[in-house]
Image (tube, rainbow, N blue to C red; front, top):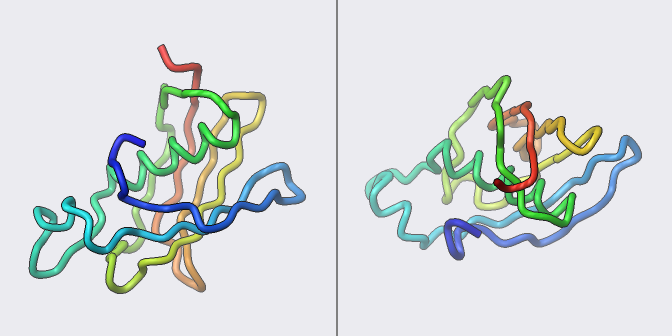
Length: 120
């Protein structure tokens, strides 16, 4: 994990479409929130992207590089206090086509699609 102790996987389940659904818990006391921002912490988008890449590595059981991001939409702010638990849906097709969604209940926080490859 690039950012140690930033999140913890609470649950992982396989889906009928070949994807996986993770339930993750954010570490609300993590030092990243001291700088982004101490009075009203929000999760940096790059941390969400890193979490998606790491969960894709778990799906494929190998280290990966996020080669391209074809589409990335941040549709709501992830706040450690307001949304400490998240669902992350990960699907990798043909060993390289990544699609992901971070959501909880009725709120979608981020969608991403891109290409992954073996870590260079």
